[in-house]
Length: 396
Image 1 (cartoon, rainbow, N blue to C red):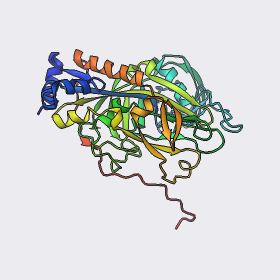
Image 2: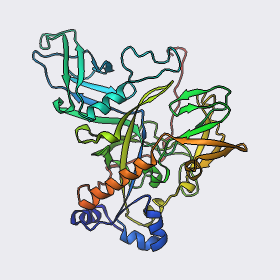
Image 3: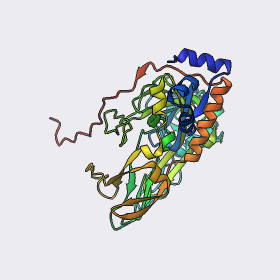
Image 4: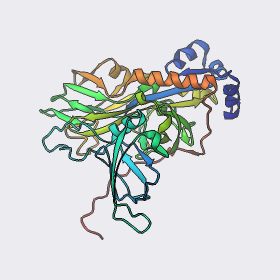
């Protein structure tokens, strides 16, 4: 048994033994579970892929004369101003003003909130246009200026739902091509797409949320951020394998971090033809090896993780709950799965290569003593379920 304090002491002294989730499996096979649990202090996990439920709060400071912004756009992308005078929230999926969206489907969605966030982190100069109704203390009614992230007082990424524990494999059983947030899906089950780092993914290495909780320090696109809440749609009560690995979406994390400390290559705006804009984010989460049980769960392999195959032409949009099959991430990463006796080509929207890079970067930071672990101040719920929207025809 180890404690957070003991592990942090070893990190501070430069003696911590840190392995990535990609390395730990072979290490345990070689050393044995109990011996490895004594030796290893931290296992680093990571993921990199589109995470639509992302955004940021920005504070511009006051103009002269002052303005209370009631409407505002950054690079013609609408930001939410219903907060305070010069605070705004920018959502990753917000479209640029005038974008035709899916008026002539499938739309291209060339620029939106995710791209603004990418450009901000990259240090580019962007335009702010703001309007106001004017007040005695905030008399300015219109403002146009240019700024970079260095001009802002705060630029804080606040992502309500990141790092899905598991996710669907999307397939198209109809006879026409469809365009989705899971990419282009060809008719008659010609291809399938998935989005997860599998055995590297944070919550798959901590399936019961023993170490990842509210307050956990994370590596968020190069900055040291933290989990500020359970993510939206977090569903701890889910179907699991005998080893406890969820076989459906399950848990999510709400993350925040300082955008001024982030690295541009891990914050990328994404356009999905026919769907819209998103933001690809890199996240790394350290798992303290407090005991052998926690270590054992970090040894999950792609072959042990099952993902549900879902028809995005009917069952997903109509919310039928039907699952065509369940396939392992080992099969998915091979580039081909078999559905109803038919071989189907598979693609990934997440990058295992980038996730592995993040896991190694985080491991290096811990070894240098630049990143210490935090004990959660509250656990993620294990028994929560996701409610459906209640659709009422009247106010009663």
